[in-house]
Length: 199
Ligand SMILES: NC(=O)c1ccc[n+]([C@@H]2O[C@H](COP(=O)([O-])OP(=O)(O)OC[C@H]3O[C@@H](n4cnc5c(N)ncnc54)[C@H](OP(=O)(O)O)[C@@H]3O)[C@@H](O)[C@H]2O)c1
Image 1 (spheres, rainbow, N blue to C red):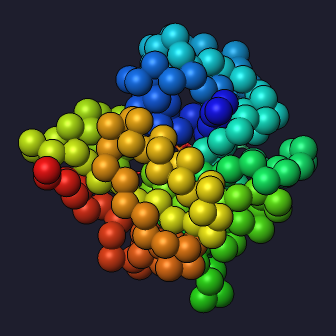
Image 2: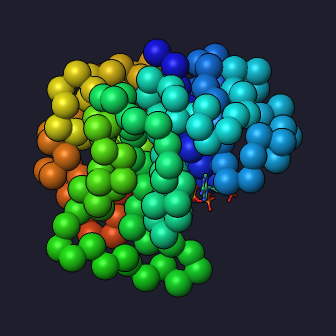
Image 3: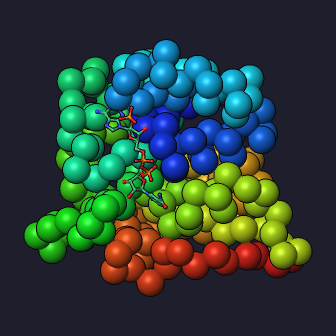
């Protein structure tokens, strides 16, 4: 399973750090090109490589962590997703105003899914601040909890397996509508809570 990351900011880099901790390979991309990522990947570790947006998007699992308003541009003009897994780590709000985006009553993952037609979308890695995602998942005598949800059972299972491999305790919240609503930020009840599973 190859892994790509579109977005190399707080969340994209934190996810890359979590992968690097487990020596898992990935290609990370931003809007400015691989040359601008040389320092970041050197610092994160040898399993993480800088690539173009197209190279990152060609992976079997692609995590997208881009500012909400820039998502259409970041996902435009890419080759067909053809059933590959896309992880939506995005929240419909952004600095500096932190004004929630107008979603016309929909959940953000439904809006996101329309930007990646043909992909199997799994919502995950969006509910914690970046340092908790990048940090040691062994916490307070247990394992830090990450949530995931999606409409495709196999895609969801792959992401659940990745979450476990990274050392977190994954909780399947159900389909995209149900889980997406629970982890939606702002509005859902789960974001920002740093939960730990004991035993
Ligand atoms: N920060 C948090 O606490 C947090 C927590 C959970 C979820 N999230 C969500 O995660 C997403 C990313 O947040 P962040 O804090 O990581 O943002 P960030 O630090 O501002 O990073 C955004 C990244 O998106 C890239 N990007 C923008 N336009 C692009 C394009 N056209 N093509 C490719 N890459 C592009 C940027 O690349 P360039 O710099 O090269 O433009 C940058 O690497 C957002 O949706 C946010 O709501 C954030």
